[in-house]
Length: 245
Length: 245
Image (tube, rainbow over all chains, first blue to last red; front, side):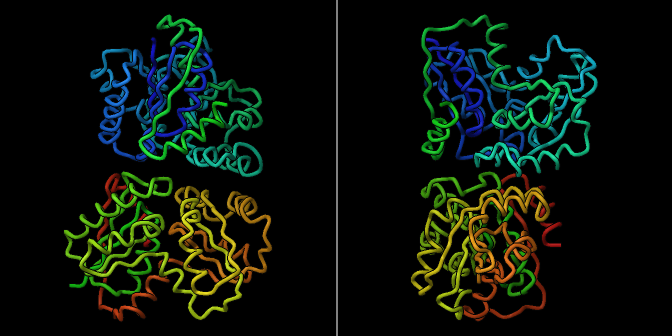
């Protein structure tokens, strides 16, 4: 039995779980959402590290072989601490998202969107610069999270929020958009509408590529998922029904 | 030295603190925002009660004479538990908001807005019914919180969100709007624009009236405020500078 633990601060990581589940790279996925303490985005680094290590302890109970950190805030500050405490591989959405740009032209116009904390952490930008990418615009887009949680992913309100955040950039010139928050893939249609020429980098798909290419994990016959939440598991279950189908 | 403790799940309660500070009913206000665990709105009752009692323990250290619960979620589930553990009066925004309707016509058309949890708790509605009010429309308006936190309180996005939430009601017929969330007073201008004939009930002003009328608290010469947060106090300080002036 091959098991993958997925840890997120809340329900957004379901977009990552969805892709891993679809890829059938594990017999079983154990998803833990720290819904009692979501969101991590506005918390201190030391607090996020402590919460992440607690999540790891919880997931260890399930004898997991792999840990995916589906939370951008935790990925930006806690990955090293998690690796020190885990006897199995730990991968985060940020490194996977950057890795997904392998093969892209170094002068591509890249738009990075994420929560205030993710953008301010500078983690994505540093890794992109190290890889030789130069043209990076990063814009914090915090309102996307509550919109997605309310199920509002297209239409007038979303269009107005896009105008607010992207009114000052030349949208047609953007080649690649890194969706630096696990909630954002649910806005895919709106991103495609507003950015006609851009390729979207989706954390879940990036993680799956990384698992296949870097860890040579192969497809299983079946794959199932178990969901746990530190508070309000009912809400997680409901969202999972809608989002995972 | 007369001291008032104010407890909120986060920063929204600053709208209540602002009114109490302005009223100078206490020499000192001690504000505690549980920013490490905000929002309470989607958490279980037992969790909210536990967090509220922890906040009370913290505020007791400051030798307070009065506790104002500026969080609607805590007001709806934890007031009785707090009263049992406190040796001083405890008042909540919900009872104060309902009390503010004393003297209004019983057939007034009342619109109640709040977070999903506040509306679902049915606390406001039950108290209003007990007072004889019959025409109550209650609508959960969860997007208002992130909008206010992002400083977006009027303009196209807000107008579109108003259309989303209130597109199906006859806005001109609303006589009274209960702003059932401490973030909402910051949207006052937009409410006035969309609801031409409505009187707005603001938790902070309602609390001040209650303190004056029911507890006969009188004006002091000076009043100051101290702010505490369970995480990210810098953010609370910044918002206080903007919101309290």
